Amino acid sequence: MAIKKVEGQMLDHENKMMEKFRKEREKKGKITFTMIKPEAVAANNVGGILKMIEDAGFRILAMKKVLLSKERASSFYEVHKERPFYGELVDYMSGGPIIAAILEKDNAVADFRNLIGATNPAEAAEGTIRKIYATSMGENAVHGSDSDENAIIESDFHFSSEERF
Image (cartoon, one colour):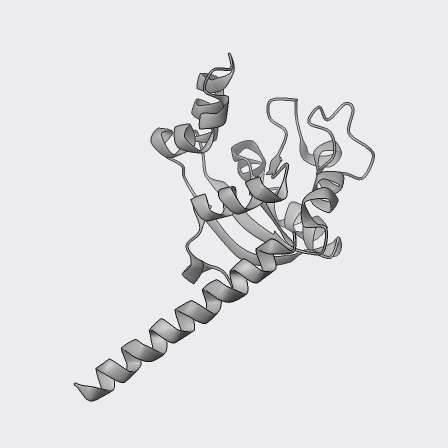
C-alpha cells in the first residue's frame, strides 16, 4: 500500500512539473498547432508535409491521427458558426482522418504561417506546403494557428498535458 501511495505522489509531482513546463513554453510564443487535413492524409502526403515541418526547424511535441466526429469538428470550428461555409467545413473535417500536432520553435505561429503559405494555393509562395500539397482553397492541405492565443486553445482542444513531450 505504501509503495502505491509513493508512486501516486511521484506521478502527481511529475504531472505538476510537466504542466509548469508547458505553461512556461506557451507563454513565450514557442508553440503552434497544426492539422494535416483529410485530403492530404488520403493522398499519402503526411510524410512529405512532416518532413517540410521538421526541415524548417520545428520540433513535434505531440501528434496523433484521429477521425473527428461531427460534434468535435463543430466544436473546434465554432468560431465560424455564423459563416456560410461552416456546415461544409464541419462535414469536410469529419469526413476522413486528420493528423493533429503541436509544434515548437521560436516565433512558431508566424514561422509556420510562412511555411504553409496563403490559403489559396494559387497565391501561395513557391516551396510552401500549400503550394506543393493543396488542391484548392477549400482543400488546402493544412491548418495552422493564427495567433499565440489560438495555438494554446487549439492545442488544448486536441491534446491533454500527458500527450505532450
